[in-house]
Image (cartoon, rainbow, N blue to C red; front, side, top):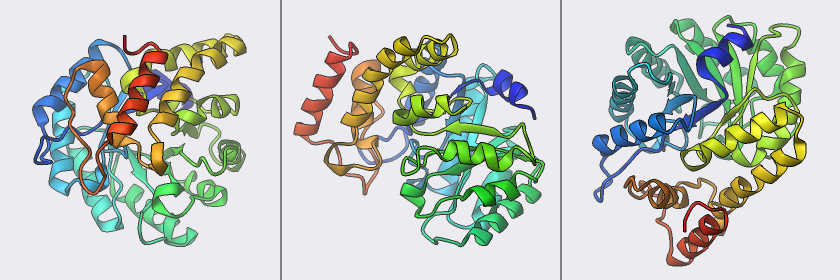
Length: 309
């Protein structure tokens, strides 16, 4: 798949859906349907990602993740492409979940680097090679060292890019803001069409300057239109406008990381509820719910950026 073909099919804004929970922390599939409808009708993204990090995939069971995929495919009904987040801690389970996605007609899976085990780079290579050779879908590597504990190094991506159905990478390596460039340089001789996406809202501007094709954005639940406008302004050479449009998104994302929160869901979820009116519920344990003090800061930011009156 060429970059142009990828862009035409999946677009620039890939949105990882939050997974709605009720008061007992059970998945509310009806609310999930409502959320998908809202996002599609308001055109806040180009593609939908099921059970990514924003969807708290590591806190969902295998069967829950499959049912979320089924729901997204049914409700989207071809109006937006559905991408499945199928990464698990083990290679065996990742293969099984990716096969389930393939059975549902999903043809692109985003596979996070295996977490908890901290494999070596040869282990990472073997993990992805096994998955790619076990399925017929395309694979988008997903690098997020702040969560999984290791980085997918550029030389490893160079080797993985030789595998036909490993077509790109989502990089959320905030610890290395220039790694997008490293990946371009590492893959240009083996696959010049290798797709490279940014995976961190706060890194949007620095990465599109480096050539990132788009963003995987949890913030798009609220700021989808603004993100599109930022990209359009940058493409038109209106750098000052792009910077001005980026500041509200940046301020919101910073508010979601209060008190050292790494996963922003506990604060992002109430933000989504306040702006959209859709009750997605609290994050699943062990993520602690938003505090009164954090909510006060959040509400203040949302008002200042024009999302609440």
